[in-house]
Amino acid sequence: MRALAKALARRLPIVRGLLDQRDLALAEPDQPLTAYSAVASPGPEPTAVLTDRHPLSGEHTKTATHEDIFYCFRLLLGRSPNPEEWPGHSSRVGEDLENVVSSYVTSREFAERGLLSKTYRDQVELVRFPSFSLFASNEDLAIGRHVLRGHPYDPRIAAVINRYVKPGMAVMDIGANIGCLTMLLASLVGPSGLVVAVEPNPENVKLLEASRRVNGFDQVLVIQAAAGRQTGLLALNVSHSNGMTGDLPGKLDAIFASRPVPCFALDAILPKGRWIGFIKIDTEGAELNALIGLSETIDRDRPVILSEFSPGMLPGISHCSGPEYLRYLIAKGYRIGVIEHDGSEAGFGDDVAGVMDAYSRSGVELIDIIATPE
Image: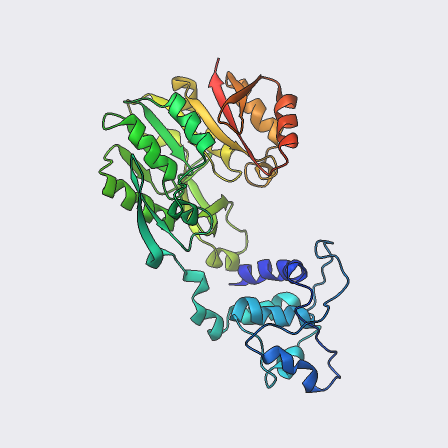
């Protein structure tokens, strides 16, 4: 809980600035209670101006303000404070922000909202596509809602997969999420093939395994774990069905508040005797970690590697830069291509600067690259 309090304490000043600036004007403590009476309304918040600070200025204080306490109510308790309780709560203005946030996170009212244990299993639907069916949730804003609207995957990526994956192949889906591409891969390799789906989020794995069974895809092997450089434990952080893994926190109280998941170097647990011909990897910045743990398989089997490429996320998770990730693949004997909007490949070979320029020109946080063995 304390780790969550720290994270929220860091983010509250940014969150409040991003909200509509006409939401709230809170009076100073010495003003009469009537100045706060509009806060109790269950409808739209009062119209006035917060501050003239830029919401992304990075300004942050370690002591609580009126706005911080108000948004603790809004974000953590899911309501606005009422006039009777506001004087007592607002009297904490000036206290340590982390302690103030922690008091709301550990409150009974917050616990009763069930946000920390919220899943989307009650909203699961089975969606049928031409070559497979897929379970998805309407509450999953990252992937599920797109699936329910008839868009199970990015058509560009599907075009690449269709080019390289053939019946009977053994392939890997590292960062399988709820299984959109896993099911596509399974339909392409057929009963004689093998799809190894690696996914650490247990909620995703439930949907993934359910989809595997309803399709009768016995050729799919689901591994509920993170892919990393070595066997151990990592901390999982999720946002709907998306998520990322990182090192467990150093402090003991933060460990109790974390979501540990097993991590494996995949070389150690892959089925023996199968040649891996294709790898799709999307692990939210952990791509280099996963490939290092798979280096023996890569050296032996020389699979085609379809990878998400996000230079902004790699340093925090894989502890490498974008160019360093590309150079790792090139040193393994691969040539790099960038996936275009129509699913075609723009070849760059070993031109790291060219790939980075293509990434910069894309104007987006991430692109997809294809690494093919020389």
